Every structure is written in structure tokens, then in C-alpha cells.
Image (cartoon, rainbow, N blue to C red; front, side):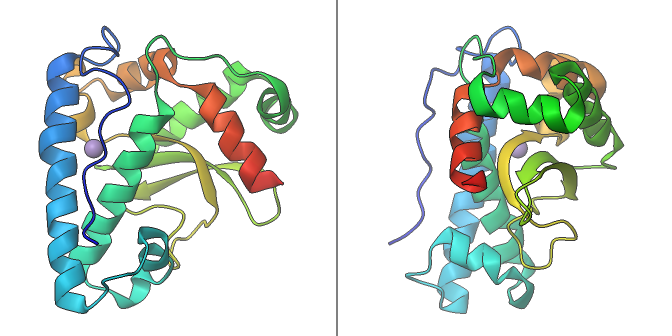
Length: 202
Ligand code: MN3
């Protein structure tokens, strides 16, 4: 079964004005589609048919750059689209309590997360993960790497992630990555982040 591009769970213009429709369209139909296509090529070349994407990522240290970059690209973007919703949803319940307990407040968490996103040199991702100890942690990864990869310096289960590649923000924010990171919270769907937290933290 070849990997396929998942449909966006909302319209291309639904995250306006935080993320413009042209960026969303290019990001989904061109960038993400290209990761899917090249991942399928790599899966064929390396005989990985039948493996789930999670299985592939958990053994990525033994794979080619092609499978690594495009497998990560497919997983990261599928996760990213689901992390957002038109108008956003505010945190509540267990995830809100866990954020307060770990970071002091939601605003303090956002500041730390944004700093990690600004600090990721070049293209990459910034993540909120649940570690093997059940604790929340912020980490960032280069290129299309993620904390599910067996050779990630900080491993864990991502529950929130933002794409800091220029293709995610350049048309609207130009080189102003901090402005994009600050605005992005307007479209974060904390309901799904809370569901992921419950699943990962037990
Ligand atoms: Mn991207």
C-alpha cells in the first residue's frame, strides 16, 4: 500500500489571516505531495513495503537520506495539519494543567517554545513531546527529522509541532520567523494536543 497525501481537515483559506491560502496550498499540494512521492520511491528501492511509517521512523538510522527526509516530511506534515484548526482551540483539562505544572503558565510555555523555534538554525521543526518518563519537554530537530526517529538526540512522542522551514511562512512573514511563531498560536487546536497527551502520558 503506497503512502498517500491526506486531505487537509479544513479549507486552504481557513487559517487566514494567520496562514495565507497561497502558503497552505503550496505547502500541502506541492511540498507535502513531493515528500509522499519520494517516500514511495524510497520504500520501493529499499524493500520497505508493508511497514508503517512509524516502523520506518523507529529504524531510520539504517535507511537512506531519501527515506529519512521524505518519511519524516510525510509524518511531520500529516501531524502538522491535524495540529491546527480554524480559529484555534484553547487548552483545557489535563494538558492545560500539565503545561502549567511544567512551564509555570501557558504564556511561559509559548515563550520557551518560540525561542526553540527561533533558535533552530535553518530549516526544521520545534516540538512539544512526552518523554519516556511521561514528562513534557520542548525540543527541535533539523530538516525533516523528528523525535520518533531512533537516532534523535531527544526522543519522545510529539503532541505539538511547528514547521519552521521558510516555505511555511515566507510569503506572508518574509524572513520574520519570530512573528510567524507568535501568530501560529491563533490556529493551534489544543483539543487534539490534549488527546495526544492523554494517549502518550497514560
Ligand atoms: Mn513544511
